[in-house]
Image (cartoon, rainbow, N blue to C red; front, side, top):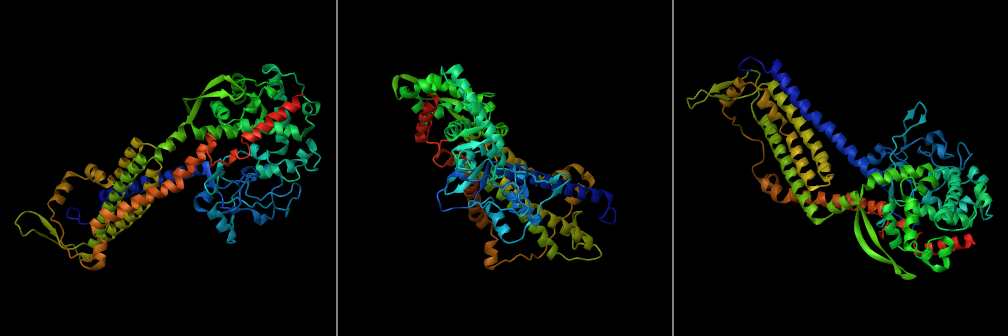
Length: 580
């Protein structure tokens, strides 16, 4: 103003616009990425299902309805039920339509699901009677598909059972006429619409069952010395009797392991104990621990028997699970002895997956304390920025505004100017800056906290905390680099503006604004609350879900309830009977 007679010069406008664009652009773009990445990663691991007081067999549950990112983030329930159509096959199972009996078309019978498909927020909005239309594409209904690998059943129980495993608890529905045989015709007809409910075609599962039994028999002939013939009804893909479906269930359960490094874990859980019994050894061809480990490796190795036996969705699910679990690191485990031959023993290798190890680290007290310190420093930074913005706001409310800018020389005799008032344009620009600043602070307080809590390492957390603080220093960097030296010198000779503050000087409001209260009490308690909330709602549930998905050896993993040691004892006994 002193040089040009106005604030609205091209240089001043460009500096103001550049500062706003840098801060808003970096904050919003990075913030949206942080929010999306955090929610997307978590939602592909874990989906919360409504609490139930009844004991739940995870395998009897239908697959959860697929939700969009917007639904998972904001709890919205997009639906196309206004079309009064339900889904009658696997083809439309990716949409939000409820599953109906195949062939019913519109208005068909919807399958009730007592465990519900929706998350808590989505279920609440759905029950409020305010559905939202799903976006339509050129080829029909389209959704930004987000499907969780695991579900939290409530009460600290989790399931990561893939659709193939869930089929194993559906014999009564597969055998539609209750004749003890699952026929090809029943699979094609799919009267109960399992293709939609479990998102795998019943025909694909039927072919997989026949193919699995056939390949397992041929493996026994080639590698385990079993003299067995493939039944004609299996070879011709006509029917699967219940005893052979039992056989197929065991193969599916074995193939549900993420990697062949889990063979030691299967042996330790007693999966093969009964197979080692000399009474069954000649029938199943697994008379010693070496043959057991070889058989397990042939099943689970890349491109092995499981890849050939299972439907194509097995490779998709396995790829997703392997991506979430990360690489496996092996450590020496205990010596396992054959319960029927003490001379037969093997040293087991224990596998720990990278992502599981990472969440084990971030759930440790040392990392949580470190996160608490970093979050508290972040809140201090936010509070300092808020204090500066409030000081400018106080200045706007307190200083005199005049249409004619006034200034005078300092009474000290030095060539320094003293500002006695500001003009209306000056006040408007400052007000705009304060509003933008406070909006960014509110946004960054949420995004930055989520960003810090999403870090999974000490060095990573420390570096990203420094990077967050850099965003608030952008205006100073622009000033130092782009403002001319002459203008800087003129600003340096300006005396500080003195005005009567509008801030309260006494009473409870003054006490609530004391920096000691915020620095020693409020902000540390807020940081502690964030860490504890993050542990309760993010770290612990995801850690348990990953342990269930990758290692399947925790009490909270419901996938193991059906396939315990007693089940496997009956399985190998059934194998021995079928081989006779």
